[in-house]
Length: 106
Length: 405
Ligand SMILES: Cc1cc2nc3c(=O)[nH]c(=O)nc-3n(C[C@H](O)[C@H](O)[C@H](O)COP(=O)(O)OP(=O)(O)OC[C@H]3O[C@@H](n4cnc5c(N)ncnc54)[C@H](O)[C@@H]3O)c2cc1C
Ligand code: FES
Image (cartoon, rainbow over all chains, first blue to last red; front, side, top):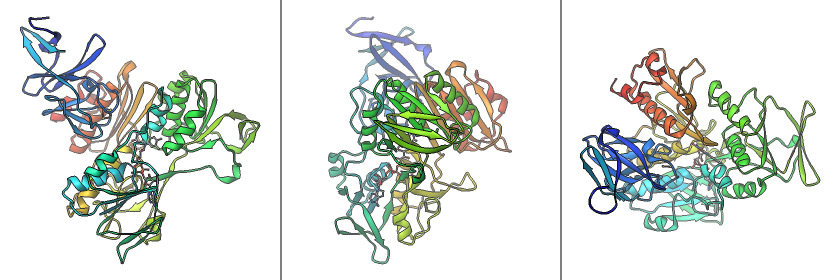
């Protein structure tokens, strides 16, 4: 943990390549941390809102992460659902990078 | 605009028509007395989860209001008058159309009457069917599935997951003969047997009878199976009666061109009922697949509004059994495949044409691994890239890296 409340280390910076995603379990909660093609980090709830599938197994394309099961898509910057059949938005979380670690504000 | 059939394709089409800019009257006619719902969970989550989840709606009444759709649920389209451009529906109304979409789906095949009849023989297509089936597959009950295709095997997996016993009777020499290569079908069979499902291939039923509370299934080699519930999953026939009676061209589905236009330029078809030419394959296809219904609905809606889009989506299908998933992109040809062995996480097969271009891929194993392989395969198929069999077979090679060609 760093200064401030509820910041939790999710992973190291080099754990995720650009345009890739990583599943991160913190306590009983599951998040997906996405690294955009230009190298920035974002975090959302880790399960698709259509069925309980890990979004981190899907592919990252531009600002979108696509669910591996039925191709529902979400804007990983805001958690907004973008393509059916996933029609419910996901919660997104603040992220910061300090030294070589990625933190999520849970 | 009028859409007949309020399933996956019909519901997708009314949404796409409004989103595509249609502001005039929009009518959705569906013979089921319910809001459009997704069918895939009926053989999976709905049978297993406790408590049972409600139908997973594709469109809520609120969304239908927002889209300004006039709905006739629980009403069937009875006939089409092509010269007047009207659809007659049960209850008497004649609904006029400028463009009509037929999204009538398919109906499960039933066993021929010569086998006899029994109360507890069910096919699975609707939510009501699934409610009956769920009530019967309690812990300790016996289910017999006739047909080792996708629906039958998903039911088997769900039944044993709920503590029921299950026998699958398959007429062919192996499971999943229609769409799945033998190597994967054997893996899937192994997974079922491990879970306690008894698989009987080359099974030829001669009679089904009711005795006391149970149903008996008798094979021609005199083997007898007892069941509390028999589920028949032997394929489905496209619902084409309406189209046929209207004089539209029909051949294993409503015949459409590459823009999904039927033999009448004001009528379109999409989903399980539709027989369409695919630019990648040298024959017509009729797919009974969820994504096909969704994507064809979008193409058909655009073309109903005057676009001229060709439907060239790569066929894609999935099935869930136990914790595993099966995914297929393209149409697997009957030829040797390149194997990628992902150890306990699964197996993927790739099919290349004579020009080393990928035409199909299918995999069975954990969703996280198989989904990515098949998703990138789908992109590779669409891009018509030449690929090296050795690279495809190498499990350490990231398939995404092949995209750069
Ligand atoms: C149990 C089950 C599990 C499945 N699992 C999978 C899976 O895992 N993966 C996958 O890819 N696919 C799966 N599918 C297939 C998928 O659900 C279908 O491909 C899809 O539903 C087809 O959509 P459709 O709109 O063409 O037809 P449907 O969803 O069948 O809708 C057609 C509708 O039209 C109505 N209708 C027919 N005639 C008329 C008429 N004259 N007037 C008014 N209404 C009419 C019907 O009552 C029906 O409601 C599954 C199907 C079932 C049944
Ligand atoms: S589970 Fe994500 S789109 Fe269906």
